[in-house]
Image 1 (cartoon, rainbow, N blue to C red):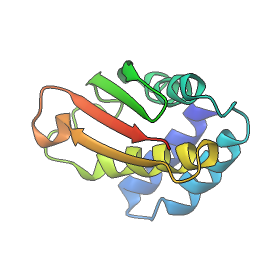
Image 2: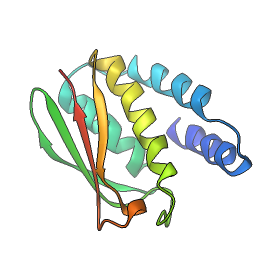
Image 3: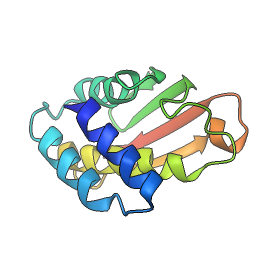
Length: 125
């Protein structure tokens, strides 16, 4: 399911179409299929990225915060294209909010912005 979604998403990005509807539709259906536990949410989010060529792992996990690190972008060489990070943030937020009301996602480090790795922080109250 993830590969089909991201294939569609990449086609929409390359053609200049908006991705909001596809991202929201996919993330809402996925959020309904996972348990609302922090560890399940973390596994789902890294699974999304790793299944399409990324290399993400859980750095830390607590009752209120999940921190993910990535050393390989699933979008290939993203340097100079931080808009790709917005796709990740939007999808992660939609999925996280489906599991944890009020969740927020912040990408504090990004390969696309020239950092050596990606750092994604999910605050899940």
